[in-house]
Amino acid sequence: MYGVGLAKGLGVTMKNLIKPDRMFTVHQYPDRKIGLLGLAKMSNRNPVSYLLAQPKMAVKALAGLASVEDRMPQHSRFRGEEFSWYEERCTGCASCAKYCPLGIIRIVTHPSGQMMQEGDKYILDVFDIDMGRCMFCGLCVEACPYDALHMGSGFEEGKYSRKDLVIDKQRLNESPKRPSTWFRPQIENKGFDPQSDSVLKWSEAGRHEKPDVAHQEEKWVKR
Amino acid sequence: MEIPLIGSLDFLSVQSLISSFFPDWMAYLIAGVLLSFMVINAMVISTALYTWFERRVIGRFHSRLGPNRWGPFGLFQPLADVVKLMTKEDTVPESADRMVFNVAPVILLTSTLLVVSVIPFGDNTFLGRLNVGAIFIIGITSVNTIAILAAGWASRNKYAMLGAMRGVAMLVSYEVPMALGITGVVLMVGSLSLYDIVLLQEIPFWIVQPMGFLVFMAAASAEMSRTPFDQIEAESELGAGYHTEYSGMKFAIFQLAEFMAPVVTAIVATVLFFGGDRGWDPVPGQIWFISKVFLIIFLLLWVRATWPRLRIDQIMAFAWKGLFLMSLINIFAVSLEIILLQDPVTGLLEPNDLWVMSAINWVITIATIACMVKIFGKRKWDRPMPKKSPLANMYAEGD
Image 1 (cartoon, each protein chain N blue to C red):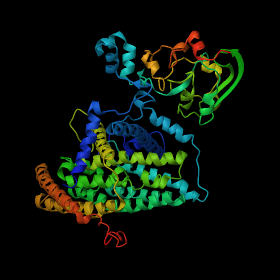
Image 2: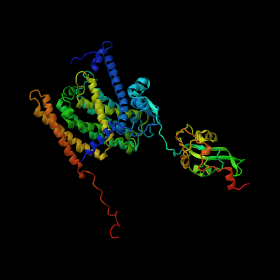
Image 3: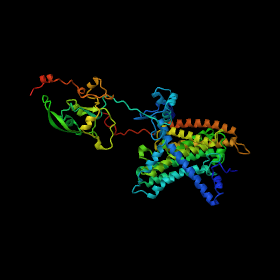
Image 4: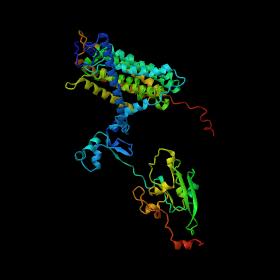
């Protein structure tokens, strides 16, 4: 019948208003407003005992002012900001800089004279990544032949000015080593989860076992 | 009528209170300024609260959150909005008609605020006890048509002009069913004074004449250009309609008038159809009044949150083919019933007569709506299907 849809629509919206489980489709981030019931449930108490135990917080919750931090868990293969870079693994070959489609990686090196049996290892003087222009394609990570560069796992790296977004060598070294397991899922098999608090050591970060010196001597030509 | 001096808020009693300290003309002035100051501020504050309420409730209707950050439950959001709007730059287009451009928002706000001056909020709580209140309301609400056209014209913007012209077409045609909807009430009471209308409502008139109530609410929500009828603004089509070029405090005044309109409409509907401050005894009349206003506001929000916008031709068709007809049927039925049922000597209607009337009117209303659904539901009232062009399928045959 003509016009029944109007009444049906009114019913749908009223259901949205009344039914608690249809209330929100939006996730609040990172501070979620929480009522007294939610707080009590979080601390495994009934609301009355919670009110007696922590009256200040409970009154705050009743006035709608209480909030809890509620961060969404990311997947361990999430491609995030703050690259995890291992200086010990890096040879300074600048493959990442060559493959970067935006050309935002800048590398300056000098020869070191170490690891002469594998060729020369270069020491990095400058390693700048302009995160303000990065599009997180991950081609630099795919290009790295020594598994030295990994995507990070965080994403809340907002800064007040553009020049703060340029990550230099020092910051890359200082940043927590929680590489995303994207493109290197072998790391996942070793039982590492970048979303946890644990940190991955440089010797663990490779796709392959690092060959010992005897094996290397077999394989590569001696000088 | 004896007017108690203290504890009442009407103009005469305040004036007589003040005139014991000041000369008469000064008392008149002071009382007027005081009361209008009070009423205007009460309206503005309640509008600010109403904007918060509307955003929260519509958010819940749409299963999302409204403003919830600033203050408990986001209650200070209107404050933040005011600060933001006041600190914005006030721009005027170069080729605008400056005088009209500046005056238009003031006219709109004034015409909305003036409606409140004749409303009896409670037993002794009213500003002016005008004996032609109903006509005053119809007249003063039609002024906002001029304001909207002025704003659209003065800003020299195509979108603004289009919105304003659509708006004028719509507002002028919806004034007819609104006035006719009020006429049903006026017929039954036999007086244009809102005070008398409240006094004689033994049964709320929305029960006695549901069709009049429906017509009035539909027409009023078109008058304040809210969502089923928001052709004036039509965000997806016209930018922002007539206030496209406005910014800063002028825009804030437009928004204020626009959000005050539902409150004012709910107040008028309370007086005309819900018995104003009438209620059961221990609770004072003012509280009854406010809760009825709240109820009607909630109904308006519910409709706004649910129904989509009508096309301009559908809107005009609904006004002239639908509401106009319904209001005429309502007036005809009500006047016939009054002639048949009223006391031949005094001309008054007893409560029993009102119940009989309401029974008849409900039947008539349901029958009318069913008939209109049948008529409007027919395909032939829809747009004709476009005819196929002979060129469209040239190579389909014979290949």
